[in-house]
Structures are given as structure tokens and as C-alpha cells.
Image 1 (cartoon, helix red, strand yellow):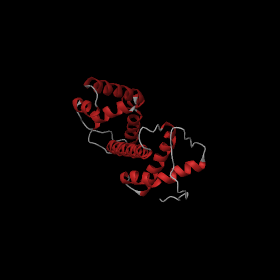
Image 2: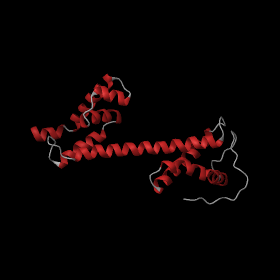
Image 3: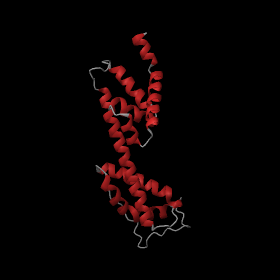
Image 4: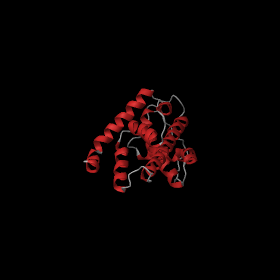
Length: 188
């Protein structure tokens, strides 16, 4: 992805009084002036051209949204770097979480010797686990799926041991409530 230069030879200057919101020409100049630099930052973290383009777009959305908060404590280029780098890292964290959860759900879908053979029931359980809040789901999956001890979970998540245990209990309680009708059908 390459940019079209606006053709201006004067650099874009941004200070506390600069407001480019609603100014298409100034916005375009800012974009053109920083495109190559932002691209060089985010493309290093992308797995593909498409992902790099997505990272670039996300970075510029954050840059334009944050321009009014730029205070000049550092150079504009340093600030642009921090925002672009942070945006790329956010994308990497999301990708890592998505891959982790894809693996978890794949494991939930794989029949285990003691698992329920009914694929619809497995899907329903996987959906119920996915619906848990992130803190409860993380502990539940680490304990029940991965077989991790509460001490390991607490250390990995940076939470107290008791919090790990209470989150597991809360997750089980929520799952019991969501899946109560299934239990009644099977054991009624």
C-alpha cells in the first residue's frame, strides 16, 4: 500500500493550538507526512499485507482521535511512533487471544474418552463457556481444560490464590445455571 503525496514541501506542524478536525486538507497532509513512518512501524508486526493494512488503518484512527490530546511533551514523531507501536501491539494481543481461544474451542470440540459424544451438547457447552466473562473463563479453561493448579493459574494471571478459586466456583455456578435444562433432559 503506497500513499499519494499531497505535494506540499512544508512539513506538517502540530502544536497545542493546531486543530485539524474537520480540515480535510490538514488531515490529508498529516496522513501523507506520517504514512511511510507509521507503515514502517506497523508492518514489522504483521503476518501479511492485509494485516499490515489493518494495523495501519487502526493506527491512523487512533492518531486522528488522539491528536487533540497531543501536548508536545515529546516530539510529534515520537508520539506518532508510540501510538503506531501501541496499536500494533494491541493487534498482536488480540491475535494471540483469538488463536488461544480457537485452540480451546477446538479442544472442546474434540471428543475425549470421558466427554459427551453428542456434538450438539459439546457445542452448547462451548458456547456457554465462551459466554462467561473473561476473568471467569480464563480460570475455568486453565483449570478444567488445561488441568492447571490454582497456584499456577494465580501466578499466570497475577491474581491471589483465593481469587482463582472463587472465579472457578463462580464459573461453574454460571455454567450450571445456563446448562440446567440439559442436565434435566439427561438425568431428569
